[in-house]
Length: 193
Image 1 (tube, one colour):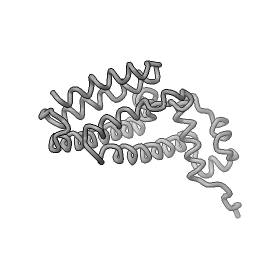
Image 2: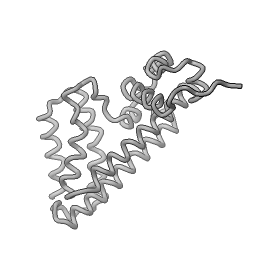
Image 3: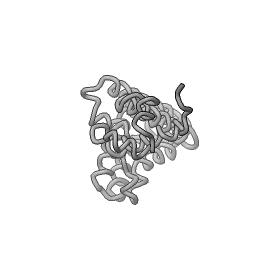
């Protein structure tokens, strides 16, 4: 008979997610995961399987949290303000580099998507969801008058999605907030052309 579980699975998963987000998959060791979660090796393996299985669960948890945040940010209020706020949130944590891990999906697009089909599919799904949410916000802005462009909403959304990783990389590379604001202003000017 096995002993009852004495830890919160969701809390342990969240802690593992933060480690993977901060360090990436390859640089994260089992020792890192044990230290972060407080689990014994046997509990970690019995609950989550191996490192890869835990990573996939943690990545999926991250993706669910971010999808909720994105939909909340883009569905309310005037479309222009919603879109600006969404993009500004990409570099909101610049003042605290210890909290600036970038977007886990973008990080994994670079680290693993080229050689891991499961990760690639998840990353592509994330970009598709971002594009669809931006497309809906752009259509709303074209209807409510907060966006001046009458260009195809899907094409504009795709342009914004293309810029999304670039802004993340600029932020992580150390560009100033002024530089990022300037790049964002230029990017969003496409919504009025």
